Image (cartoon, rainbow, N blue to C red):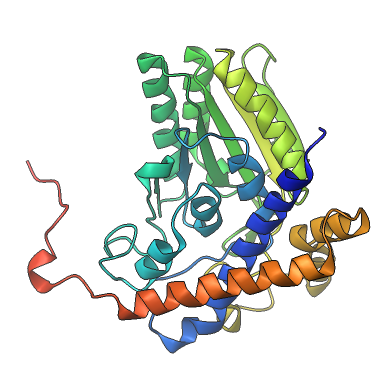
Length: 323
């Protein structure tokens, strides 16, 4: 795929921004201003950016507990994200959702779920709504290899094929479900699902290659908009940090340090940065300026969050559904 210099640098900027936001959250988490549990997506930035770059603003995404990157890549406001992590009423979920329940309807992010596999059926339902409205939108569903163990995935995929729904299932295979490696939960390579090509486009790709993710998603989006039905994309990547919390809280002993080191060398941000620098698409000065702008944006977002008010006591029952 022949991409413009601007598109290439935009993809890099979005990955770098997500990485820097995650590192800032990590560095401040033990100060306990952020009361919410967090699940960092360091190492998985190429998936979020590559997918969302192929979508339009009014296309839908459904996310999961490790969803900061999805939220930012889809256009969610950084200040609202950081405020949500601090439980403030200026947060994207008004301080009621925390890290695992992010939402920004204005950019097509209709919410993330803390339930493993919880967003899969929601994203499939969004695909059904799109088809019923005949709106030519697309629904992209992000989920991990742990969620691929859930029955809801197979039910949803079958329903999407049956109804030829415009849904793209994005499996972020980061190798781990909490402390269980994928090899302990899946026999062979069954996580990669095949079906007749007229029912399901199914591909396994390098999830640390943002260009591969972008190109593959563009193909899936075209298929969906043409009424040809769902796609399944397994993005092989790695969860560099622990399951939850900051790096200082990570449990040790369950992962081979050699494996972690090997995946660190496949860092999606560093790999793409090298390509851009080697090809003269990005200069060191431009990279430094980009980092400074992002750092200023992050500092402003954290300052905004700390100054923002908490929901008041009389607001505790707001936004509840009762019959």
